[in-house]
Amino acid sequence: MPIVIEDLNLRDAERQLCVHALETAGTIVDAAQMLGITRHALKRRIIKHAIEWPSRELGGLSGGAAGEGYDARGLGLS
Image 1 (cartoon, rainbow, N blue to C red):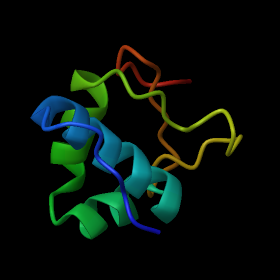
Image 2 (cartoon, rainbow, N blue to C red):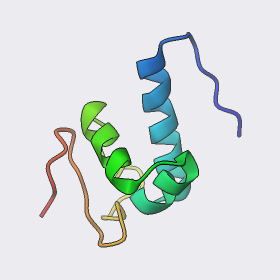
Image 3 (cartoon, rainbow, N blue to C red):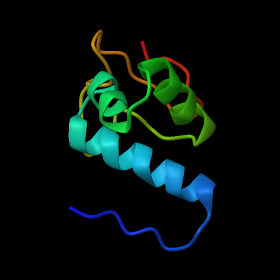
Image 4 (cartoon, helix red, strand yellow):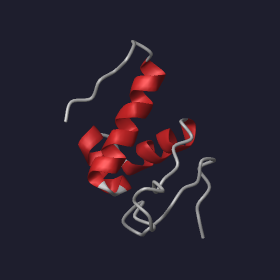
């Protein structure tokens, strides 16, 4: 599925790519691999862009290899 970027705003494009990779891959580790970055770099972007992960649509904690989840502030979920 092609990703359509509405304008040339790099911040918005980065957020959109991260969200798409997370939704497609299902885990932080796999999404980071798709993006060609480390999982730590992806976690920093989740915090930077206030991406809610795991997504409410996916349900459950599928955020990473250890099942870590992050809220919009990037704080780990218990």
